[in-house]
Amino acid sequence: MAEPIASIERQTPPAAVEQARARARLGALLAAAEPALAEGLQLLQQCSEAGLLQLATGLMQEGEGLLEILVKQADQPGGAQLLKNMVALVQVWGQLPPSLWTHLQAGLEAASDAAQRPPTEKPGLRLYWQALRDPDVAAGAGVMLALLRGLGASVRSHAQPGPRKG
Image 1 (tube, one colour):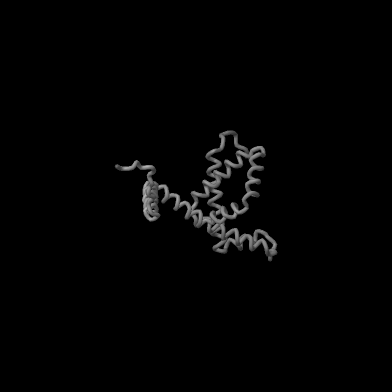
Image 2: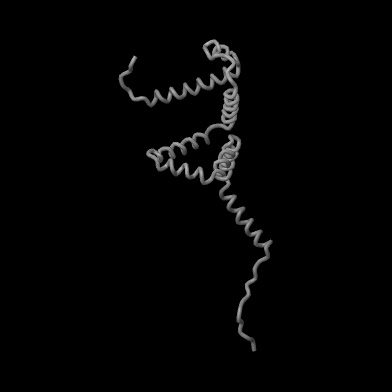
């Protein structure tokens, strides 16, 4: 006569089978999220090209000190508005083309280098007119004028109608 079964031993699949199942699950998840992943990778690439990933890495390495600064700022009057403004600024950064960040970085580096040297001439209108003949200065002035034009158009479109002075 047969004896009763006292225990059942479950067979564990080999590691290779478990890895294959995990890859299949992961593949299904990747396929389902493909549009979002593609968009996220594009954003990540743009952040990298703009140097934002390096900036974020540096900020994260500051760790506790940075967090302490943010918490102190949030406790100040208007701190919530500061955080909202920071989020809005990051959103604007994400919409700008990476090439713009490259140009801004190059301009800031040139300005920083120039600030380290004493001026060779006393600033005046003559110096400014001469500088505008430089194609690089003229191109930069054109960008700044476009910025001022856009800013002015935005200010005028949101201005309250009322009596004008002057």
